Length: 621
Image (cartoon, rainbow, N blue to C red; front, side, top):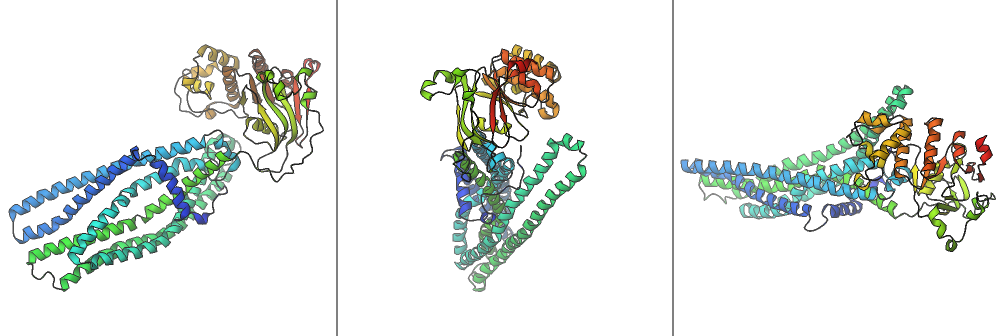
């Protein structure tokens, strides 16, 4: 899911231009696009270079056709006319074939680059819980989903369109400089070169602000798209409020912000386009000026009229094409600015993902490290069995197999916040001892699960995990795209799981979802719907329990996982957890869940906590 736009950037917007930052970012992307000398993209680029050079040979011969027509028509040479016409048709067909082949190879490069960059981003994005930190905790970049799905696509598409002209430009410019010098002297190529340098300097100043606004436009596009996605995902909730008017206003605000940036962009593109088009047409006039010098100097007076016309036509083509080679580079300015803006966005995302991967913990240096320990009695003093006291690590090796995790003096709070939710928490989750976490809303119950799971870093203390993993059922169950079987075995892949259809049917019967199999058409029936749209909150929680029973872990953390389920079914689910030897640590508000637990961990939301046993007589009363 997208993260809302408007997040702070790691780089100031003034750096989004053609500078050393852009070069570093693009070089990193370039290395990913060309991973080896003999990679597919390297070989395709070499093939594209050869095709482009061959095309230039064909273009050169096509350019000489008019001068040949001047000769055969001037001499009334019928055979020469026929031969020249056949040659012209074949060259034109060859040029059409070359252009389409070059476009095809460029398109293959585009999709291959997109695959390479996107896979590389996915490798960083889905590494451990980086995607969670980027979307929920860090928010250093706006709309990471848009950068991965759209900005990479735009970058690769733009680069595929400009790579061929950039590759062949040194070769074509060098060749036509020599040809122009032979026909007009060095006045022609020197004047063309100076003209190109001047146009390039002007365009450099005009391109930098365009890059910055391309970056901003992509950001606003992501914000606008996210708003529409937010309405789509939460359409029913919004409809209950009849919130069409207010949401229309908020969505239009996103649109107006986007349009405002687009107006700024097109104003700056106007100046750039004016410079580009002026260079194109002034260049064509410059070609005639260069040709006029030897003509007025009577250098061609010794030739016949037909020969002089043919020579003038040839020199005109050479000079004009030399200017065209330069102006093509100038014409690429618009595409280069789009590519640069997207390269900044993709490169910045790589930088943030790398930083998050390297980060070991949150920075809580603003808190006082000498926070006094809680005076409350730790779990080791009040556990159900006095033999379960904390022991030294050297003496506790055998019990590690029965312990999922141990918290020692853990203090935690929301990331990047000075708020303390719980201070100096001590307890361990042992096999057979079910723990109920209670407290008012916002006191830190779900936050405790985040700390235990590693989603949040603790401010002080340590969370030591045993050899047995804890299976988590969050408040809002997560369902991926795919079949019903894929939902049940998640997070395993189909090829990693054991075919246990009877067990799946049994657990679906227990939670009352056997009808879901008939509704879909089977465990492996392909579905293209959104599971969140098709299942009610209660059905989602029940299906999450089917997933839990299928995996049958030794320990499970249930974050209000029965809040949308009736009391009778809730009792069956907890009873089955006991039969499957699943030790649970639950967050719950309803009294009905107390009887399934042995210990109560109560959080007061102000840093205090207390662990007390849940007595059997209280359970039975």
